[in-house]
Image 1 (cartoon, rainbow, N blue to C red):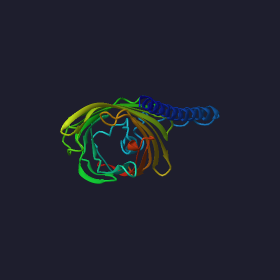
Image 2 (spheres, one colour):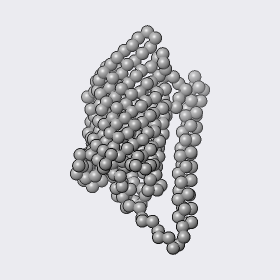
Image 3 (spheres, rainbow, N blue to C red):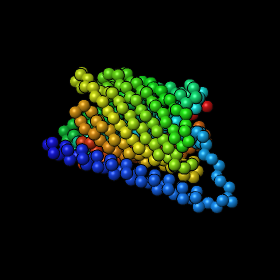
Image 4 (cartoon, one colour):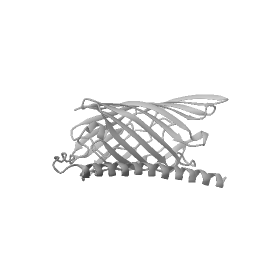
Length: 302
C-alpha cells in the first residue's frame, strides 16, 4: 500500500513538474521572440508606445475578473465601483457506477472598490444540488455553501509585474452536508507578469485552514493550493486562458488532486464579461476523477 501511495505521489509530482516546465518554456520562448523582434527593428522606425504603467488598466474588467479561473486576479477592482461575479457549474465526479453529479449556482462573489487598489468582498450565497449514486442507491441533496467576506490589496504596479494579497473568511453557516463545521480562513498571494500587450502569466498560492463536518463532529485540516495560468487576448475582445491547479488535500484523510481548466472570455462593452469553461482532473483513481463545465458573467455597476 505504501509503495502504491508513493508511486501515485511521485507520478503527480512528475506531472506537475513537467507541466510547469512546459509553461515556463513557452513563456521563455515568447519573451525571446519579443526581444528578437525588438532588436530586429530598424533604427529609423519609431519605437512603439511604452506599455501602460498599470497592467490592470487596459480592458480592466478582463484583467480584474477572478472567475472563471481557480486562482485569483492580481488586479483589484477600481475605486468606487461594484463588480458582481456570477456563474453556473455542473461537475461529474467518480465513475459511471459510483460517483456524483453536482450543480452550483450562482457562485456569487461581490467586489467593492473602497480605495485605490483596495477592495472588500462578499462571498456567496452559493446553492448546490448534488446527486450521489451507487449500484444500490441514489441520494439527492440540496443546500447552500458557507458564506463570508474578504478583501484584496493590490500593491503599486512595477513595470510588467502586478502583486496582490487576498484574505478570505467564511462562517459555518451553510447546509449540514456542505458546511466546513467551523470558520475557514484563506490567504492568497497573487502574482501576474505581462509578457506582452496581449499575453500574461500569473499564479495564486492559496493557503487555507478549513474542515469537514461528519457525523456531527468537525475534522479540521489545512490546504495549500498553487495555480498557474496563462491568458492571451484575441481579436474582438476575446480572451483565452489555460490553468493548472494542484490541491494538497481534498478532505481529512484524503490525498492531493491536480487538474486543469481552460475557457474563453468575451468582453461586452466595458462593464460586462461572459465566459465558458471546462475542467478535467488528472488521476487514475476512479473516486478522484471529475470533469466540469461552466458559464458565467462579470458585471460592473459603474
